[in-house]
Image 1 (cartoon, rainbow, N blue to C red):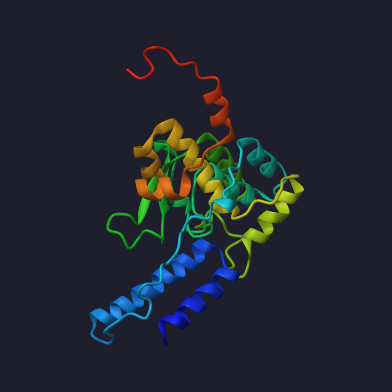
Image 2 (image 1 turned 135 degrees about the horizontal axis):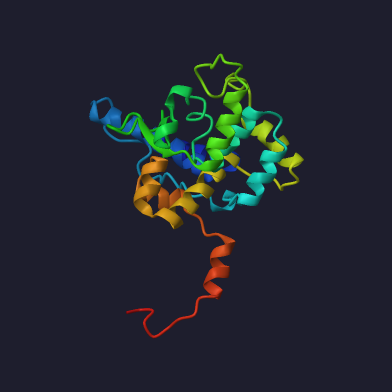
Amino acid sequence: MKPSDFAEWKRYLKNNLAEATVAGTFAKTKAVFNRAIAKGWLTVSPLGGIGSGSYDNAKNDRFVEVGEYHKLIEVCPCQEWRVIITLSRIGGLRCPSEILRLRWDDIFWEKNWFKVTSPKTEHHEGKGWRLVPLFPEIIRELQILQSTCDGEQPEFVINRYRDPMQNLGTQFARIARAAGLEKISRPFDNMRASRATEVYAEYGERLETAWFGHSKKIALNNYIMVRNGDYARAAKLELTENTYN
């Protein structure tokens, strides 16, 4: 195939997929060709000179307010869904990969944390798991769910929604409509990013990156948002002669 063929393929992808998805697809394809060159199977990559594109897709960024979280919780069809949304919005877990891997044995009540196993980062040494605080909302919803186990606690926290054929995004959209909310694009990504933004503002970079399992660069480029309340707070900021000292 010629470079022009790949340029045409990229145009097709951009007409049908999100820009970040196109960038990821091209980055992986480039890696394949670069590996082929390293092995001596090719001398030149047909993707040379064709940019991957940007991973940023700000138009789909959506801060999910705490008040919206409570509205979602109120209309959840079952306790497992309350836990899924709480782990996403309050715990900042990736859904479904991290949430469906959470076991009851990963919950350390007495230490106020729980262990999150992350398939996305497990190929990095020492990054296959992380510890996340048991925030009060998480404790409440997990304890309610635990009380419904009738003494026979299953291995995993979430059991009803483990079938890979189930589309959690579609089911979330129904819950959001029942809560009276406008459409939330990429709901689980945006709930995670919303919590990352709050944690970054309240606890700082070090704890945000530790609890969310990503680097500072990833946090700033893909997660931390500007909230409406940031403008309101800035409008009330009164400068003094010592502000910049």
